[in-house]
Length: 385
Image (cartoon, rainbow, N blue to C red; front, top):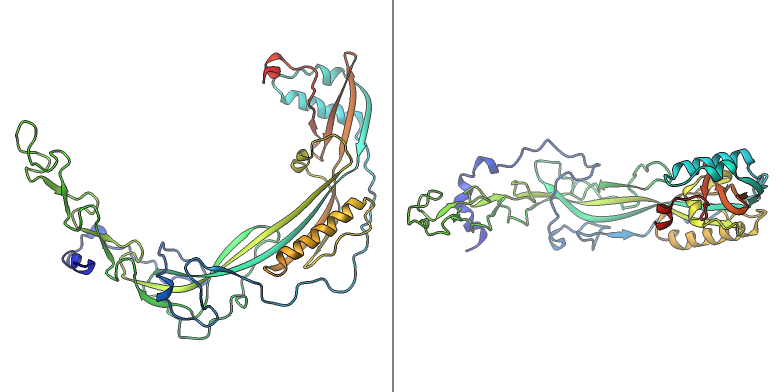
């Protein structure tokens, strides 16, 4: 007995509570699908020129457009004063006092009573290359058919990279889904065989299930008639409310699906970052949490490696970063913009004495954060932790 026969009795007078919710109207073809429908198997889909071979999962499309490479010329060396001044003793002390106050088990004594012996500024630079890319993929999708315009035979579908899609704010990840014009068609729902309803699996379309109170016997332990099922041994199915079937979740009871090709556009900011530290002793993972002073910025569709920087390690990092991003993204994605920056990270290594012993702490970043691993006045609970 097939599914169509199993549902024939219930389809004539379906229960009102299982009628599908009316659609709010035609769906904007430039917006993502709103329903929860899944597309039918790929072998049921129409053959669309330029989109042969795509499936439900889709696949990434290599960029098709003009070559992405720098033109003639070269960037000039960044100009600026690259000397890093030491912070003043007043700033160093204020930062240390705030640090001690933020720790519940630290005494403020060392921060108040210390004697500075040396403040050393360390040349610390952060180079960052950002490559803002756009990638595209296509896949079959569908939504319940409620009378939307079907444009599959109204023209030739544009190529995936020929569809104009406005991109969001530069250097911010984002995603947009667009219906490809002239690819839509109406298909019968594959989940319910176009019936709009699915048989209830719990009661096998009967609408009744075994009474859980008497286990189907119709009698209680005292041999009295079961009051829950009135002695029948069966009760109305709680899953389908006795109807024997439920509204198809794929087509929402419509029996038909509007199938179309969906273009998925993803924007991603790919970042290369390198910190050049001259053995200050500050753990490098601390640098990522602070901001620096931007000394150089270069933004272009395709940038050149920085040259002529006083610290050659920055020049080497820039050359490596540009080459890596060219190899990774230039052939597979569309490059919308690149940006490279050099930041000056203020790091001051502070030497001080307290109670005839010498200690060290660091003040770093524009926020004047403090790091130390040997604060001299902790309570015993901090020592245990």
